[in-house]
Length: 309
Image (tube, rainbow, N blue to C red; front, side, top):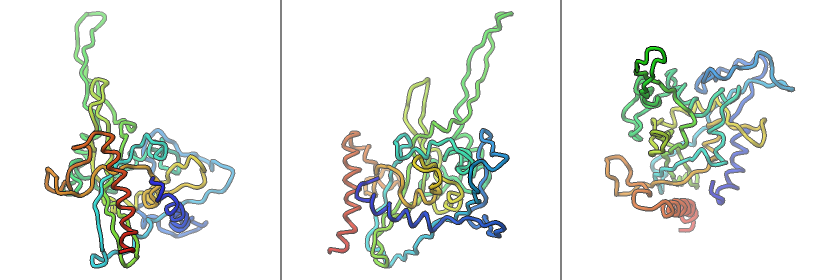
């Protein structure tokens, strides 16, 4: 997270956290379906406790997405589309790699997303489609997340005959090391402030061939406004305080993650709708990092410039 944003986001996050999470009172008739459905376990490795597991009376958390302020096109004085990348191996992003408990859904963040897609709660779009034009079927999704099977030769110790054996692999959640965000930074004159709206999110997995890293690739894209109800039902692990956890919706809206900008809208895109080239396409890794920081500073200073000029 940028230092200049940290103070403002910390103050904002206090209000966001206290204002968006409700606690169901005994006998409450609140319908959890308004927030995207009830929380469900996302894998078979986590078994919920059969008794209250703790020294206090934990109430069911019924959370709803933080309401977005309506923005009219006529009130937008400046807008910039930005693509950024979250590396889950960085310390501020440890919540993405937490294996889960009863409050977090019993799985990692990627498992929550994949489980919701399989259950039909949310739609996934093609991994090359950040414009959300091609919806993936469940079969196409499984093809994307499941590693290709390996073939090995096994010799029968008795007959000496060599047999071919196909070894199937399951999806490995830890192979997802990054997430890409597509977002719009907007100066809304009605609010008199810069507003960020996330448009899409894509998990990115490492491609390993014969034990060697061969690059990374997005698995699918999700239209972020459509998944906010789901994200509000699952909590993010907080390494500092187990009782003070954000929901995933609060986590993204209060910008509690570390990331770097990888692309901004520009006229040099090779493909229609691509939004232009990435920094890494024309720069070495160090230059790309500097350009990311420079772009972040430019967006941050734009809000000040709109007021001054």
